[in-house]
Image (cartoon, rainbow, N blue to C red; front, side):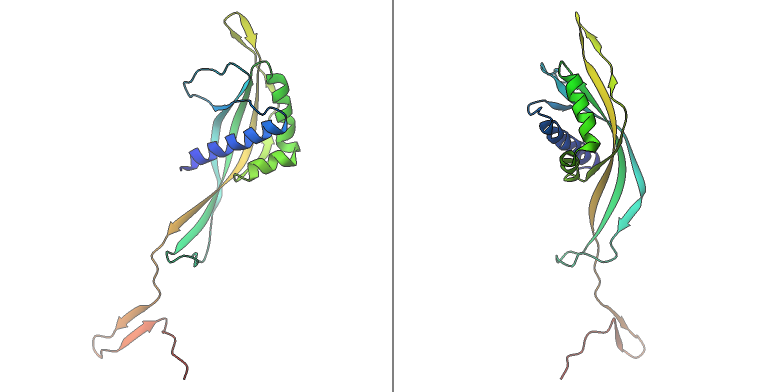
Length: 183
């Protein structure tokens, strides 16, 4: 799975758990720009606004010796800005509860941390009602900045010894030397 897809999925999973903690067990959490019908009940929209790689990668100096294939493991850090939109009749309460718990609840932070996400900061909760046909529908928005860590394994070619043959003398030099059996 790509970095974008796994990050977006991780945000959704954490958001579902955050809403459960606030008592909204059946609230749909959808991605923006899906071209699907709008849910008939209150819902939450997750929109990725910005992804920014922060710093440089951290790379292991040794390979993973647990498997026959030798892997280097490195991790990259990203800052991701997500806009959460709460829509429908429950939007004021749902948005307020989420806004309060995103940085304030240990359980909600752990729900995101299980998916390599950590909420860093949040904007204020913005009300933006929208006119639909003949009535106004409540919408609330909040932007949350997350830190996201990506682990990557890269298989590397492994060389244990190099043999050098002196063409003049025929001597074979092995680097590093092979261990000699003890008598």
